[in-house]
Length: 315
Image (cartoon, rainbow, N blue to C red):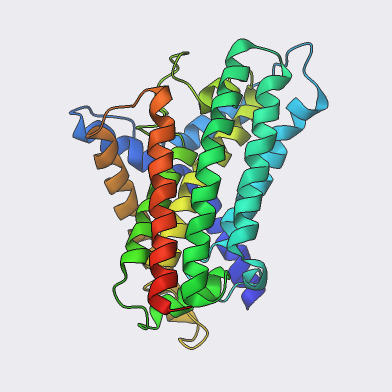
């Protein structure tokens, strides 16, 4: 049963990722007074890219060709590790927060190398900015992991979700700080406003788009699909740790509870998409030299949360 649910989870995140991205774009268009493309437009875009021919630069190495496949596989596996509608997954014993960060870091590493592989100025610019963001985002993410691990005594996502649903947590300032930190890291990692604008190709402000300018065809489809999966992954991670209500647990049973978990997960994604669209339409993109202040604040909040939790437990 756990193997079947794991296959369903992998198919579910793969199917919902483009819809989530399209839904966020549609809500932003509505908030800005525009009609906007329908939420299912990303499916059409990916299908069109898959039909197009791949155009490669003459000096492109094997790394440039292999990166889209490695990046998509790593992020898809990371998304499969995060419990979405149930904690009864075959990969639950390996669904560790440290392993999750390692998979995301591996995908970022290969994408940065691919951005520099062709030798264009934009690719190198985007790769350097991506590494600058990662240098501050990953420590903040690790401090969130430490805060949760101090409280739950484990880094297993399935056990964290079960503990949070048990009602033994209560209201904790440290968890609120960890939540704010995780949201800030998710914004930076997904190249959303105010760090980056996914709807523009302005050379001086690009981060993620600068690294993938040379991709086309199925390679670009895989890169875009991986970006959509990454957005869903972070929303699912926030829901798993801080709002796991509605998930099917081993004590709850099967059938109806699994369907209820799927329905609640879709609702959580819809709420997260609306909140993200509202946030992006109400704030301006910041300058590049202020990225450090934004992510430095996230790192400070995560450090304070870990210290408060450590002291409050008297460990």
